[in-house]
Length: 599
Image 1 (tube, rainbow, N blue to C red):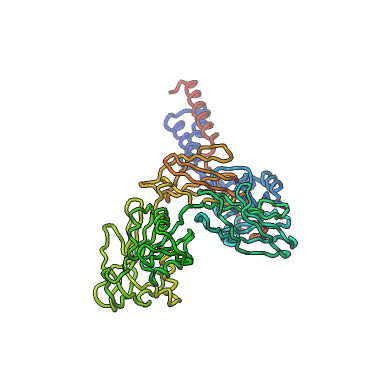
Image 2 (cartoon, helix red, strand yellow):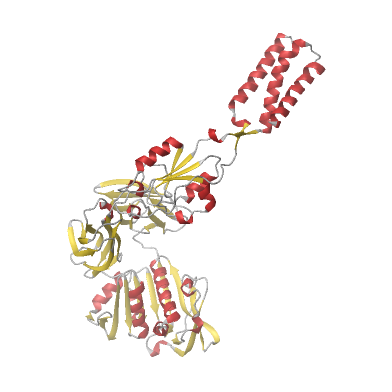
């Protein structure tokens, strides 16, 4: 108000000085003086950009409406919540990071914090309308929670039977059994009973079993599914529970399994010492791919390390040639010539004439390598010493993961090195006796397992020549969740066209990679095959299932906003009609001056 009075005093004061003192006009100058006073007062207000308080009643509220899938599950009240939100104010949907503003509750998550943080900085009242089942409800900051009024539309309790977990390896060797870990639950007061669970691909049943559930209980079990008769390639397996409840979308879970003629990880040892046996058992425990091991017990005579059955040399060579990760122990390096693996793990020590240097070699780890995280917080230099090493030269552009000193004296020698050459990654181990770490148990066993897992992950993370410039991080996602592609090509990420085929229909999309090299694609439930324009093919599936459909208790409650709405101010420059009045006043002054014969 002070600025308005000041602008009026200055505007009309300057106009009066101009007409009564400078031009010395009489009462005839009153009309142009008033016009000039109005124009100059408005121009001063616009120059100062004066702001004026706006009553809260004039500010339309922001309504954050939960658009997660739980709102349209059985017992949900989406229509009631949507209609209420439209009556209250401007509706903004929340749930996940999906772009766009779809008006359907199809979000695969219920995250409120990002949307509420953006709305809280406005000068408008904020309302939240949800069923109360929020993923971040327990971590909602108090100041954000107090900023909004929350109105709940809780789901009605509807009994449900659900397959809450179905997990298994992503790849299986032809002829091997696929072991699935399955969990089934009775929810929201569902009564007990016996149900049939089947595993099928397409219209073919692969395995089945009966599941006994108590009222409100759960069952967890492992089910073996034979891969016999499945041709090589990707297969979508559906784990289905015949429950007959009101929510069929929670009765089926999908897995995508690739049946390969050769295993994913192949270990060939010659000879088969303690290091080879310990490494094979650890790989079986920590690797998610099928593992095969072969040991040479005589010239050209191999046996399977799982059951010591004889294995033909041609079988070993075929497995080594098709492996994703090839582990060669001792003098088994002859299989390297025909290998197409993207990861090679070589263990040099073997026969006594391999240049071994015996001693008590205490190992220490080096920071800043791809496997350094495996040893965080572990006293590696106090573990049992290795028994021998082989002199090793660090390759150009390679990195050293471990060094060793004989009896903790003398120079430190590199014993584990790695490098990446083109599209292949290699790790070389030139130390004997690391099996002692796993044998002793405790922290040393933990370090050994961590190191094997980290090394395996790094070697298998090398770009696959069949995947092109990007690969799918996870082949099966829940409904409402995105399929994420990771950039694996050289250079900075660039947009890549991708084609999707499902049920005979084809659609084209474009992968837009962010600064971290990830691109997200949201698709409706179904089974898909994809092909990148830049090379690379694969399969994917989006489940009808979502964790959002499971009955859960609310994580927030109804409340009125406890913190006041920030005072809103309206700027003079936001009022377009002021510019119009100023122009009209100047035009009137000019017209009146012309009538008086003035310029």
